Amino acid sequence: MPVERALARFRGQLVGHVWDAAALEGNPYTLPEVQTLLEGVTVGGHRLEDEKQVLALVESTQLVHDMVADGTFTVSKETSDALHAIVAPHEAIEAGHVRGEGQVRGGGTVNLGEAGTFIASGCDDGGEALREEYAQGSEYLGSRISHPVERAVAYFCWGVRRQFYFDGSKRTSRLMMNGQLLQSRLDAISIPFNRRLEFNQHLIVLYSEADATPETPSKMTRYGFCGESNSPAVSDSSWPPKPLTCAGPSPAATPNCPRNGSGVNSPNWPRSR
Image (cartoon, rainbow, N blue to C red; front, side, top):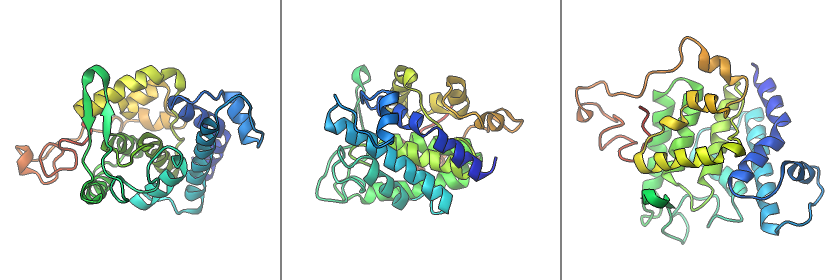
């Protein structure tokens, strides 16, 4: 499928993408109300904060489309920061910057209920560790995972778990994932609101066990998370790709092995069974 067709399909599904993303954040806007807001008509009966969140999702989703269309989308911290600045300016502290780059420290804590609390890397060093994690992780994904669907979904799982931002990490990671899919001439992924419970349960596993198996492309296709044009790629003879493994006899024997201390996902990288 040509990039132009993937982008056209993305434009046609824009309302659904925005509504799903907003609903997953607990936003009360309905699908018809999102459509009305997209048409430039204010919808009454909602808090201003909810309207701003929907409009931010619209603007950031359109930016992904435009960046892919004009060839400026890259898997980089600069792109991620630019999208975050638009998608979460009303909720996140110092939007457009990873934790620690401004005046505020802390963040990166996720309450998992009965599973406890997940704590990502700190940012007392001014965000230096997070910047290094982003550089290492994005390089690893680009060089070690060849299938575009798996690579994009792995980025989403990694970005969510690393908690690069004070708020809006899931939304930003989803936008970056979809930019990669569109670049690869594939449909973007929208996580349906009616699978919210299932999605949140899988996120707990991702946070607590560093296990991204429930979010792998084959599972997302089964759950209906993937667009139509992803199906042939997922079901062809080269799919599923082999799980990430280490070539050496032990983790320590293989540089950047996902299981050793020098790799980008130990203990912070989503693994796949």
